[in-house]
Length: 212
Image 1 (cartoon, rainbow, N blue to C red):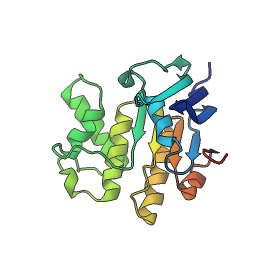
Image 2: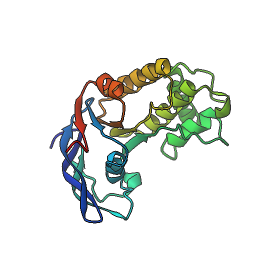
Image 3: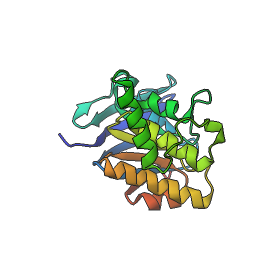
Image 4: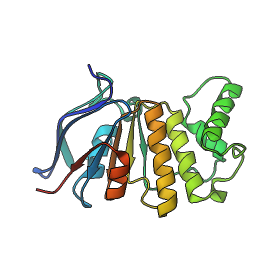
């Protein structure tokens, strides 16, 4: 079975009306971009993949990750990471504690701290472990959110318009960082976006929903 993320004959309906259909394989390190206007079902597709589809939608087809059928697995067992528009950092935790939240429970405290420090160093934030997330810039928050997700050791990465709140210069920088990290870890990536520049930067296949 192919490594990567495979959406096999996935169809989502609402009230009996078809919303979207996708049949695609995303190889390790590759990016599939799904574009389309609001309400066409882009985020709904991500919810199906993560196991959080709202009950007013119905879906058929299967989701495969590295040869395993995860269609009916519990959300926390799917090994799928997701980044949203908002960084969703916990305001009551330090930057380091936010990152540690991504790690699996257990292990030596020193080992966990070493992984957190390593992650901060990788994105140019060495020494930020004790900082309050409220003191970070938008770009710094985006980097912390990315590394927290990567510390959970996902086998695939979903991007739900994650660059849309960043200004143009920062957007390109964070976008390149996300794609570079995903490629270095051989993660299949599915990105949903309105933005043609994001789609071009991803450099992979583009599927447009809602164009008839």
